[in-house]
Image (tube, rainbow over all chains, first blue to last red; front, side, top):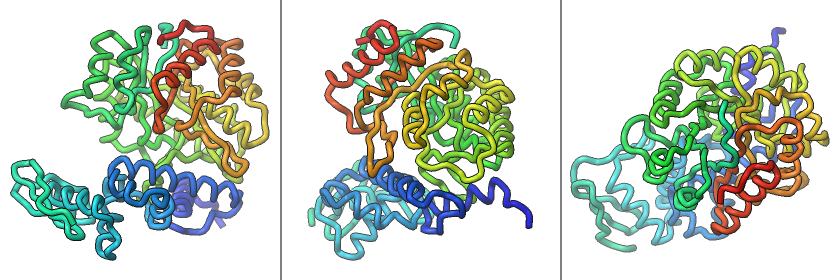
Length: 147
Length: 272
């Protein structure tokens, strides 16, 4: 049996760290887990910088809630990670009013299809999320309704 | 770096005002990926450049240790940023950050094998073909090792530097973290590295969780890391040392205190 290449082994390691795949053979499981948890904590901090209201609205639970959601989802960048999480919470009726306002304003300002990176909108658009409504005209965003 | 710069700091937008107010500052570092290749520079950074402060672009996403060739667009961006900043040097990590199409979101360690040395050296050569200034490579802090290391850390690093011609960006906090977590003596690594190849040095804080020391960059610099700065400078004082802080920023007085502590530990003048 041939030895797997460096590339294959690196891919297996990244999948174990970010996508919930098993820890590759031979690694110290305790230390690997410590690295996995530290990585989720770091991601939570980065997403909080992009989505301050989403993070603030969850208070002490933010890191835990984010880590639970992100455990098997490799990062697609902090902006999109926070966006995906905010939309999911909105769908489940679990988005606090301040976070709903934050999401509605983003939805008004940017077009984000959930599969490729967000792009600024060029035409006037309404953004809605969990009862919050924002409008964007010529690049400026106004909040029309608080939830 | 040929010139002596003394104590510097990692420039971040959150502490731009503080950095701008440091009267003796002669060098700083900026995360390369946070700088636009064209377009305007952040205000605080432009002020430093206008004052003649040397600013080094520090890449974090090249993935030099990836088995696949480093992405051309990323290398071009680094080259463009180096040119914009008129930097005498760029830096990156001996690590990989993605594989199999997945972003790890973090710097990950390489197995200390000849295959990994080959991968890093090939990628450093690709970078050096496009970036007109030298590159310094930073060994990372890792919470785990690969199970099949063939080389010691010093052998692994020295071989990469020798074969690629790169300089060394030595992070003493990483040296401390790795030694503490492996139960080895951090000074021992200093004795086995080519210290005359150190372009500059990172100093950062960390914290212990569940018996492991984490290189967080969001905690204060602990005394043993400052002691290691002194131990390094006794062997071979590097031309520049800088504080790396990446969040949970303390009040300005505390940040200034950390810079002063690095100055005292290295024997360079205070920049505050």
